[in-house]
Image (cartoon, rainbow, N blue to C red; front, side, top):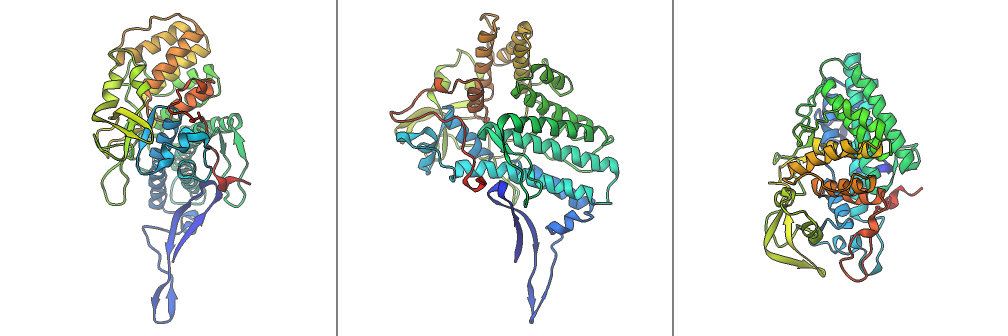
Length: 439
């Protein structure tokens, strides 16, 4: 029998524990699979190998339902349509015929569950580290700094989609309340600072490998990722000064490689995941279709359009919606997905400078992004309103189909500017918390 653990703030089953009940004659002898140790086993004096397997589990779980979260928010933000066999993708998410979002449907439960599986695994890692003698104090600090940083990263993704989050989920029998956006973000910022303190005491090397963190796999370099997330969190809290301070300690580089940053990685190995946002060119089903406005509103010569999208051999139509372009964002089903790349940090830098009224520096940062897309320098007015409009436009094209647009429009009160694609459709800008989370 497979022993498993459930907990409310995932809405799904998490953590394989162990296999028992190998029947020989009439007796039952417990058989422990060394590759899938029991929960009790890892919580009590776990070996370094067991701790490292937990790290692998955390990193793997971060990819859970990313495609669903991205296409759902992208549909609501009129970035794209997902044409597949499920009518809810072109019905519910667009508010067809006055319908409401379902708090017990896959587009609601799967992203929430995916983020909280990763958080749960990270919390198990934190508990296990405290109860083991197999690693040094400095190594323990490294595990803690890693786990807390990932929890914070995942909670930001929850807040972006749901506008609230349950932060305290370490004890499945005594879950904390679901917090509103401001309270949840404040908790995230505090957790990132805790993680920073841990990372500062972690020595020169981690005791564990990381798959998607090339260049960010030591305590000092991972700290730069932590500070990048802190810059994002501060920005979302409206704290431009703190965001700029965090950026100065991150891998943000105004003149550097815009693609630099950690990634979710995929493979065709047995048991691994593939990139669910990759779609076969000119496929008639299961296709991410680019919203016409993304093409029509682009500046002439913007290479982000030509590199992220592909014109189809024939336009396609489903459920009264149509499009001539499809996604070309990922080259294959094992292409990595960025977690937080330098291009986003440059845009964070621009926005933080707008918030602190350094408009010339904000313009300079926006020109870095524009020039990288083969566009000339910004020629608009140097006012807060005009630069903010330009910022949101650059975020729209730089971060297309990356789970940003719905949140950006919501936080600036601009969701009502989105087009209505069919008579009877509606605009939604926040996903409902899953039914299973209702107290």
